Length: 440
Image (cartoon, rainbow, N blue to C red):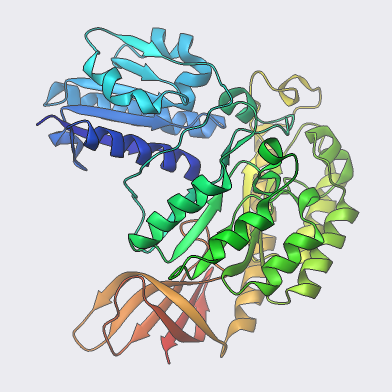
């Protein structure tokens, strides 16, 4: 039986695409292997969002190409890189035998079977989106649930609309059906993902249907947590806030990608919120959901960001005390409006600003963590760190932590615990971004 290995890079939406490919490959008669040295065919599912992501994808291609001196007979590049840059990719990466775009994952089996010579299949973006059975690659007790693909926001720095196409939602029925299967297979936490989760359903139903979707998902037995990622601030309304506040299955956690705080830069970015509107939103969220954890991301060194803009952003981060923040240096992406702007910032200035802001957020996190000591919270067990026969140490998460991107809780226990179990933990201390606790 032909063995296939797959390397998945980039965001959680890319992961879902990879999981769909894995299912189709297995159904098509291929054996899946996690060892590239044992693979007859290697697939690299790439990300092209920013320069650093493309570099990671290119490095992975070169690394996997080394296995063609061994057992590997075919190397295939899929995903965002060929979708956006197929002409350059096909000419430059002669090590790659086949290229498949983001709209063609369903054809992975027939593409491989017909790969007699170097070729590519990159279909234009349409109203259709990838759906189907998946081989879940996360731990059994949680899974990502994609509700839409594409984006209509057209932020001036972003390539996503040109890669993924227009915003297109899945039907509530299809999403709920997939969610039920994931829970039947052991998932206790579902993490809802989209380029813009808060716009869900508008293209299908003529109005936003996120709250209705959440209500339907909440009816699924044995589903404990529903987590929301990528909620745009201008579409977070009272209806959604009330549902999060009153629905015990929805984690008191929101990922709200702001990218900046200052009005001048937000306008240049093509964002639709102002600092005052965001501050009012945060005040409302914290009033209605006092324990909510807010996560966001910021871009440093956007064109024309001067010292006043940076000082304003520092003040915002320091005063808003968000639970988790990701920082990125602005990447000048060819084909975007921002790349053509005057006032590009020196790369060293970008990096210096990023590091300074990260230090401010680190102080915020330490203060937040200090306030958690002696609290008792329910956590889910993700992994085991050590076992000396008398004491076990586990990696856990509360509802305030998303996997992979946020801190975790290291928990000591006198008893063995199964992965995916929910336990009560008393917080006893912290180390940087991570908390420490003991089972109670």
